[in-house]
Image 1 (cartoon, one colour):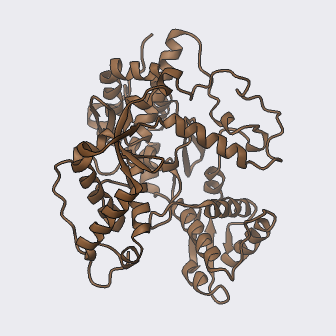
Image 2: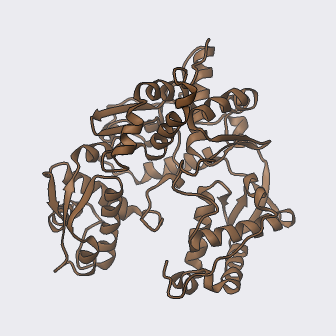
Image 3: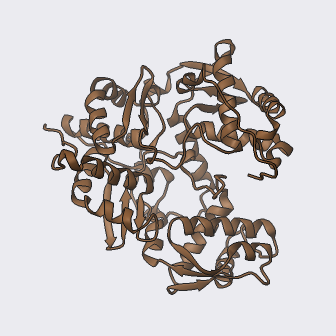
Amino acid sequence: MTEHRVAFDVPDHDLAAFQRAARLLLSHRLLASRQPGLDELQAVRRWLPQLQRDLEALAGYRLEQPTAEVLRLIGPPDRLDPTQGLESASQRPFDGRRYAYVCLALAVLGRSGLQIVLTELVERAASLAAEIPGLGLHTDDHLHRAAFVDAMAWLERMGALVVADGSTAAWQRDPATGEALFDVDRDVCRQLFLPPRLLQRLSSTRALFAELDPAGRDARRAFVRRRLVRSLLERPVVYYDDLTTAERAYARNESRALAEDVERLTGCRVERRAEGLALIDTTGAFSDRRFPGSGSVMQAALLITERMATAADRREDARRPHTMDDHEERVVRLDRARPPTVGDGTLETNDRGAPDATEPEESDLGDEKRLPFFSDGWIASTVQRIVSEHERAFAASFRADPDLLTREAVDALMSFDLVRPVPGGCVALPALARFRRVRVRVVARPRGGSS
């Protein structure tokens, strides 16, 4: 079988422009004239046919243009990944309430006109929230207002809403006097919630991942290759120990050709190590999150990383958790929490015992590879020392609550695949070793800094 050649029709002098378009598409996934902007949208539209062919063949992505002003990249979900959730403007992970408010707001906006005032949006969302046990949306509750404003801010960042007048911050301070007027991009709103299958017809969370494992050697090889490419594009590090036997064999034997295709598509460099693969963003524009980074949380995370790397050889080991172990646990937890009215069993799933393409083979789950273990107590005391030694480097809120700084710093390390949680603490993953002999320069915050 002849494999697809990436950017086959792109002249060498245009390759950089094509790769920039691919990075824009892969980093934003949803592009509109307002967000990230008309220039970016036109840069991608120029290469639309070539990108559609390459992304489908290389990664199994589907690139759609529902309107002239919107592009959407859709890929099959491979697993539940807690590091890919929504975040506030200050990079705080969304909780369940914020996710619920996003969904309720989209339900309201789907039936609104081209403009809506914030108080009307809140009133209609609150009416829907009142029907959900334990949720509610009460404007006299500061925590509810803060959560709703975070949801609105995310919709603004996605281009679904544009503030035409007023301020959400003013409403958050005083809902009796604060107001905002939004322009609504209905095309973007329609694209923000597109599950791979109708949720009302699912009988199990697992059905979201029911991608059929193809028959035939060539088809199976292409299937495995597309899953590997998606992992490389979507995850900070692809560890061989997290892969199935077939994926690991392909990654080890065909990594050079796979890396060449991904590099030609993105303009980034694929780093191949004994432990796995990583896509290194040498352009500085492929992701809005970088490590090391700025801010209190990222400074603390880097300092924790440096101390973990130095102490790794002296730590006792713990079993290395497989990413599919976590995936399976989350599937079970979601199904237990699923309301009994959701799913009428009309959609056939692979719950009858057929192999799921996302499940690792038993030999993978039995891998007892062990890695350096750091207890919750060790991490907490390390952060306490870091805050004491570099007090001026951290915001006042974190100096007053080191436990909050610890949680957010560890979450940041997890999102970059440097550590993985285990009962009682976390284990250091191989990529953390590259920080073993780094020189960390801590930047003091300006007087009065608050974030």
